[in-house]
Image 1 (tube, one colour):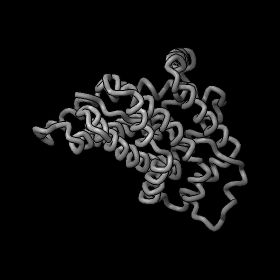
Image 2: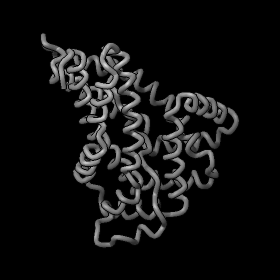
Image 3: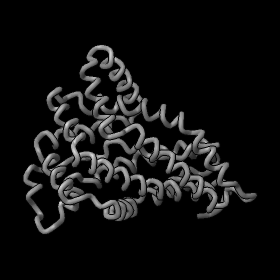
Image 4: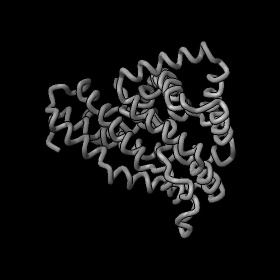
Length: 280
């Protein structure tokens, strides 16, 4: 019937401050200091831009006759910075990263390599907001797979270590289900709709979501890490495979999954209201 508008959840690690940050603010827990070190608000800013772009595509697909200005105002409310930050803070607290894992992750991302990794990741996310840049990244990924299979294998190890494909698929499907529920609460199905029908439609999206995820992940990784040596990339893979890396990855995915399921539900409700021509 439709696909929910969701934001990619892969590699949600933004720009990190100076190496001395891990020793600062010693009165706070390691998990709180890690949140500050990761600058998660910067990631939210990118996701807000990604979500707004996707929201515009949604309007063109589902209610193109609706005033663009009116929908812009709706998207601004849905992707409000303060609201998103509040949701993320609550989700991160609920997910509860153990102190020892948080401390180890904080030390890694405060290192010189960690700072370069997160800077490159954030820059790549910005770059791939442009469709032309994403097309170039896909070509680069295809070329790398052929020309340097050992390097490409390192990227595959990173994908496996962080379970990027499956976690993205799970997050996207959860958001799709939440979008449906939002549309129901917004009155999009006045005659009602069975839960089984909703679940069937969400599951029918899985192949397309998988294809989209697999198409996006490797171009993103190739773009992000092009300036890292094989040795640096191997160090990052090893951290991702460690207990701390696994715990941090799960913590971030669970937290962002909660945030974007909630945002998708709100977006679904507002979509239903726009389709019905209701004032908001």
